[in-house]
Image 1: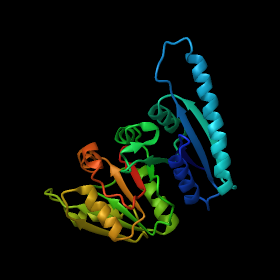
Image 2 (image 1 turned 30 degrees about the vertical axis):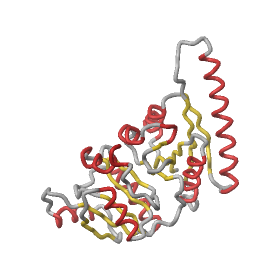
Image 3 (image 1 turned 60 degrees about the vertical axis):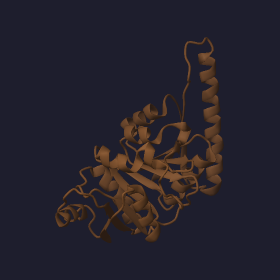
Image 4 (image 1 turned 30 degrees about the horizontal axis):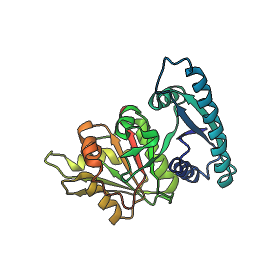
Length: 271
């Protein structure tokens, strides 16, 4: 049974992400969706803390019931289960991962750039750094479309994580997608044939191709490539912090070209 964890703060953005997930797996009868709402107190020491906590728990559970009711109208056959938890979002999610090993985490993001304003106001970059598990980030305006092409942004280093490989392979095989690897050229020497051979070995019977593009603005170059090639999802492995920072550092996010905005599959080479 696949376990897909969907984070929600009951916003329209979070609901859109949930609907995206439900449509993505609508043909799977072996998927259970856990709809998680985490709530926390910003203060402590007050004699009213327990009362406030109880009230927040009540509102969280009430919101989850309402959200599931709405989602069930669109996908009545989906196995949706509510999960309300007290604590900091990152801690709650990491605890859930340790205990349940979900297949994938799905969340919505809002704002002018896909990673600038994030679920529950958290800093997206910090969340992605802290949660070392496959995460599918859904921009608020994104609608699910069968991913005919998935762009994989790569530094051409081999992928060592079985979890990362199985996650992207599951999507590729599910939809018979083409996997388009994109590397932004820099000054570092890479034996391209050797690198491509190692990466391709992880994806047998998959339509693969490798591309090299130029551009000082990495994120802009990647998303321009996606737009020109009608890709639906961009995937990347967060392994090298410096490479990742080039794409998602706060000073660069505002420069990201996300019109149209694309779902982003963030993978990790540590799990």
